[in-house]
Image 1 (cartoon, helix red, strand yellow):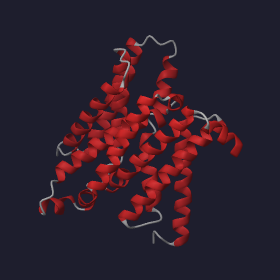
Image 2 (cartoon, rainbow, N blue to C red):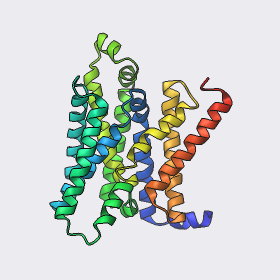
Image 3 (spheres, rainbow, N blue to C red):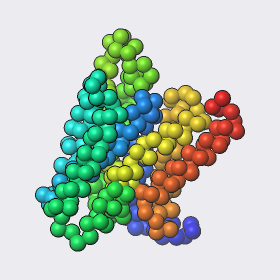
Image 4 (cartoon, one colour):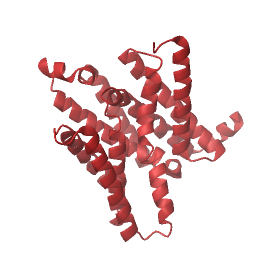
Length: 280
């Protein structure tokens, strides 16, 4: 097995996939803890479906670089989702469901009406559940992922104290002069960027798992916010790396394999936490 892995690692495409997978996993895990604690974890579902709709539009207009359209549409939707979720007439979960279902239906409708592909079902399935496109990344796509991932990590580190304050007590943060709405907006934009980056890795339907599972797993073992965040990042990177390797060796779908490893890690952390009495 080691010799097989070493052989695959000689290929640039595999090395690029591992780099991108690790960076996406790291980025998604950092804000996953905040989203879970703020009970806004399903924002990933809503934005991933928006990204699917945007990708459908990009395919219809034959854009060579789909990221030019997908990224701004997803970011704008994140802002609208945040604003709509703060509306007393439309609660956060209702806003997510509304945008999620609408974007998914709109995207699939466009792909059916205007698609010139001979394998529409295969294209849709690949977009929703991930595909082998993670193994065909270009140098430009890898560098874009590196730049955006570094930006996400830098933002989280630089604004760590503010994000911590907004996560646990938004009203108190506002009372002491913190621009809580601004930081919520920043979190929403960063999550939108992560969603777009993760589409090639796990597909639009499985992105939420990449955000939620490492955070939930870490919470089964630790109670301190900093410890949970650090362990969540470590676990997410480990599961992503392991999932990609297993996918390559076993010829299984990349996205589903990564999520399966995340689920297994969650079960192990839950049993370990229960045995240690962490959650008592």
